[in-house]
Image 1 (spheres, helix red, strand yellow):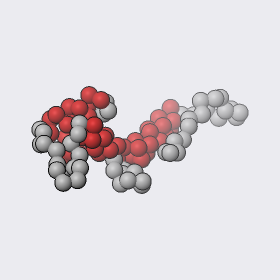
Image 2 (cartoon, rainbow, N blue to C red; image 1 turned 30 degrees about the horizontal axis):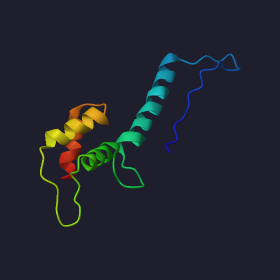
Image 3 (cartoon, rainbow, N blue to C red; image 1 turned 90 degrees about the horizontal axis):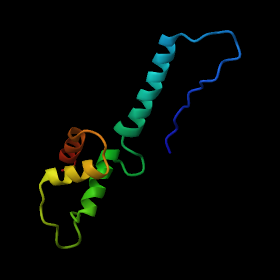
Image 4 (cartoon, one colour; image 1 turned 60 degrees about the vertical axis):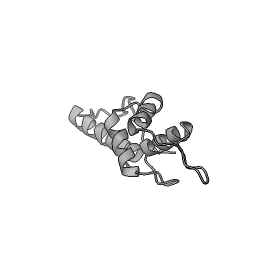
Length: 104
């Protein structure tokens, strides 16, 4: 589970006000760190990024995994990426294509 800090919007006890620039800088830094932890760094349990995990799961659902002595028939990468984008990856196609090429 990812530890995500929570922002406290309740009014402070003291009369000290928070500068908008300071708050925006802190909030952006917290968001950027959570994005890096959640998307850009590989997970410790399997060493894969979320997009790579989605690609492998989609390929398994399509029957493209290697099973024993016979492999599956080849398909175009656009079919795999289209399935990933349509079902599991709500972002642009460039990240999915890039991850698929790097995994090949």
